[in-house]
Image (cartoon, rainbow, N blue to C red; front, top):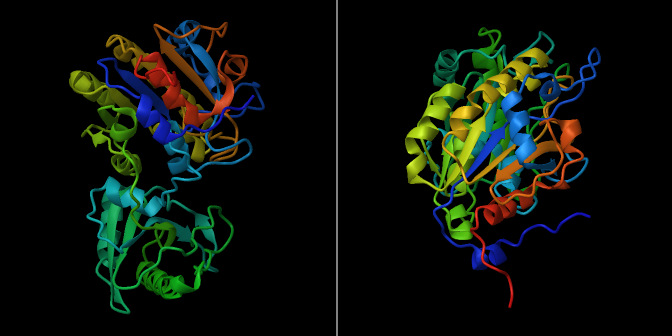
Length: 405
């Protein structure tokens, strides 16, 4: 039986502050598909003694980030983990990337996430990520495009990481309701940007002119000889996790998009290094100062998108090896899951449900003895919407009052 989505106004009335601590460990793109040669997914292939041992003390299950059969983007997947219905609280990728690098978005700005990409002589995309060029190279190319003015609209182009950058359009009368140019596949031409409502026609035209100028400027900069834009958006206003859950939340993530998302829902964002070990050090140093920790691991998703099964396995094993550092802090509640599945066999996000375990002093352990897709399918939590995770974590942390008389 599927549960109803949580009513955030109701949660506000029953949430209460307490000294207990919740850690939400998100292994991005965790779910996978079986390797045809072994019949095992990346998670099932990885040697994970610590996660398996934890599963024996926890209650496990599978989550749907949006809905069965729906492939989620990173933003909807994470919003669901934080308890926000992604169908109601939708955020464009551009805004997330911009906030993630601390770009000062103004009212009326339209932001888009960009990829430097490779196109062939006939204009077909051969690599959406331009071979994952270095961040230094990205910054160099962004300087070539930054500062353009088209129809009295100023255009800012700023590096994010590797091949990723942001474009911010600033001027009067802009509307973010325009389509993406990124086809999100290779072997096809970039899409033509179109207005999704009549008021957005001018913005679509300006974005198209920017892309045309970028193409001319980058022509001799192979493999980064073209740009792809997606996630055109303007900054929304969300209720914060502090307001809803009475928490003091913090994010430990090195990747800009997730830093932006954390800020939008009211988390403080800590500076940390790029390695898994760096993030665990940051957690330990700051553990006394907060009661909710969003701890994000990006490498698994990148490996899945690259189709690198073995690298995804290795990163899962690195997380498992470092898990003892987290457990030594004795969190009152630990949730381990992912925002979506990214099977290496598909080289992208997928609709497959994601394994989850929830450990606390007050959980009711099931008979699951390993942390994997197949084992969690028989877990005591069953299969349920990811939006329910926060309520379960709050309940196990004894942070919810009784509902009703």
